Structure formats: structure tokens, C-alpha cells
Length: 239
Image 1 (tube, rainbow, N blue to C red):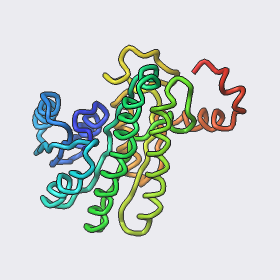
Image 2 (image 1 turned 90 degrees about the vertical axis):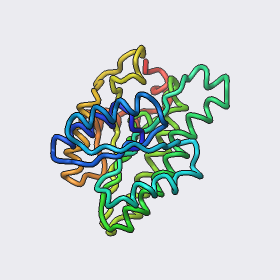
Image 3 (image 1 turned 60 degrees about the horizontal axis):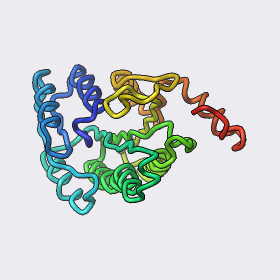
Image 4 (image 1 turned 45 degrees about the vertical axis):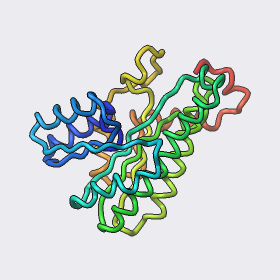
């Protein structure tokens, strides 16, 4: 789990442990939250390991993630780290905006390629990439975050095509507004969901070997309509 203290990652881990997963690696910045997450999962009976991982240090990714794969085959990698940022501040402070972009896109490209190569070497496994409906069409309210997710989504789709036929499965997950610490205090969007609902969708998608998963599923239709809405009309929407 890249983004080991992420609420979505932990909900997914809990669900997979309930379905007989026995070994879990939590990769993230060393913190009390990461250790607490590991303790929670150990309490469910899993063999849990933590490893220091920094999305903003791509030069370390190959060595750090290589240690995990060196311990044995990995059935699933969940790329669940990300930074929402503060749109108003990030517009004023380009360095803050770059941090959002580097975390959500550059860091994910680096880690995704390292994991994809390792999965391909072992000949099987799934790479699950946590994208967002925000990447489907950038909104005025969060276009910096949305643009980074748009890049990540396109990258993951292309990576999935590149790995087709190798035994490695890439699945893009596009949740809408998820009630987590990251979104606490923000106005709740229609069709809001929970980490547990995302985890359920991830598990089902893995069993079906889906390439794209929307959470909730109704967002597929909603975003299809919004994607084709004329720009002048889109600007006037209260979103």
C-alpha cells in the first residue's frame, strides 16, 4: 500500500485481510499514524511491515520498493497517496502548486513504473491506481488538483495498455468526494462516498479484473455528461 496511512488504503487492506490476505506492506513517511495503521492491521491477524517511502523523492523509489519485492511476490500494489492542496493558496504560491503536482503525478509516475516493472518480472499481480473524478474535467474550484489527477489517470491507462498480455493488471479507480481527513471541512459533493465503499469497489474490481472503476458507479454517467457540456455552460455550474 503506497500511502500506508491513507484511509482508503487502510479500508482496502482491512477488506482484503477479511478475504484471507495475510501479508501487508504499508509504505509511507515514518509517522505515528503509519505505525498506528500497522498496529490496527496486525490486530486483524495480518503480518504487517512498514517501510519509509516519500513520493517527493523519486530517486529513492527503486531502492525502497525493491526491498519490498525482494521479500517475495506481491499480488497487489495500491497507489493511494495524494495531496489535495489548497486551491486559493496554491494559485498565490506556485511552489505549493508544484508540490501538489509532484506528489500526485510525478511521484506516482515514478513509483508506478518501478512497481509495474517488478510485477512484470514476477509475471503476475495488479497495480491499482487511485485517480479521481476530478481528473475527468478540471473545475475552477480545484483545477490544480484536478489537472494532476488527469495526468495520473492518463498515465495509468497508458501503463495498463503497455502491460496488456504480460500477466500484470492495471486498474484505475475514480472515486468522487470521499469522506476522509483530507476532505474534512469541505462542502460535501453529491454522490459522496466513504473509504469503505471505495474498498468494496476495489475488491470487486480486482475479482472482475476491471480496468476502470467508478465510485459510486453512477458517477460514470454524470461525468460523461459533464465532460461533453459546452465550456461556457460548464463555467456557470456551482461545482
